[in-house]
Image 1 (cartoon, rainbow, N blue to C red):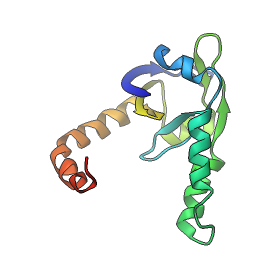
Image 2: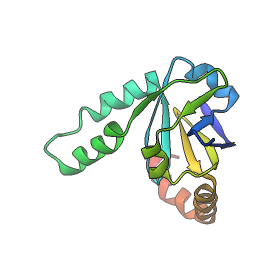
Image 3: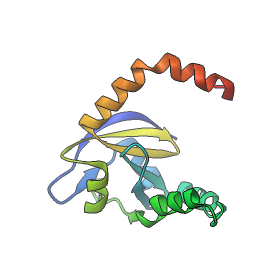
Image 4: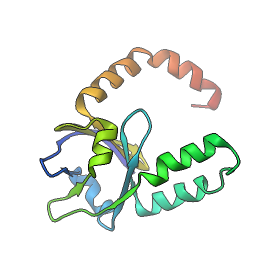
Length: 143
């Protein structure tokens, strides 16, 4: 299970170290793809397989299903950790997420999210400001 918030940086070659506590789970490989809210999602191979199985059941006839499939699958890239626990994030994904040097890696149960640090701080501040409203809206879901 991935939880927590960690500061990291991307080097000039596009490599970023992942938090040491998650490396064991990711050492067999990982998948990085476009996420939502202009961040990147990083999945273990098994979590990715589960997600792809769900996406593959979306109706091909619906435009939004096709768009979501393309967003998640066409942009995905297999990555492996090097000896220092780093992954290489492709340029097109760094551009998508607006990643510069300083990043935040956020653990969200079955995935990691990689954010540009400034974007994360803005997103987090807005979410914290609206936390009561968000909680009330999610109350109907049993949260």
